[in-house]
Image (cartoon, rainbow, N blue to C red; front, side, top):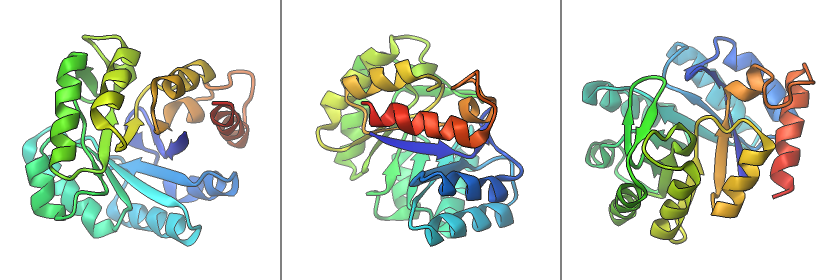
Length: 223
């Protein structure tokens, strides 16, 4: 299972993301992402360039809340040249902008607000997953631990069955080794962490960013 380090805190990209990314990559993290709020385009471009130079995979997660803003964010992701675009629910708009959807992973369920919460039952999530892969998406970005209407792991299991071999990324509030283990057992392919590394809550007895990252990587290796 892959660990995607998000250069974000409280659903916003940290202002010094283009500096922090150096430490993240130096720790051996091979999947690094950020969100489309919090920093100007110039910072995002520097982040993507550093990820690319390290041979790692870059991710942009769309957290815009209006249809117009989502379109703007999708266009920005394409212009930045990120490897994977996560989030949003308008697959038709994504297809019109991106063309090939193999690198696009929309939100299944009913995401609302910012920070985002996830409504929807396992059945609704499964239906959205099937619809996404029928349109050519590479997988989905499931906000399992932001769920308001269902057990998070029930959503992960439902998505796993519906997606078949397509990629299941779980984002949001993955903040402990126990949650990483539960996601692995339920069939997730990857997970994101941002705030829990930056605020030290993943490993509360340790203070350094690198210590937090090493502990996340160790928990991932145990799955």
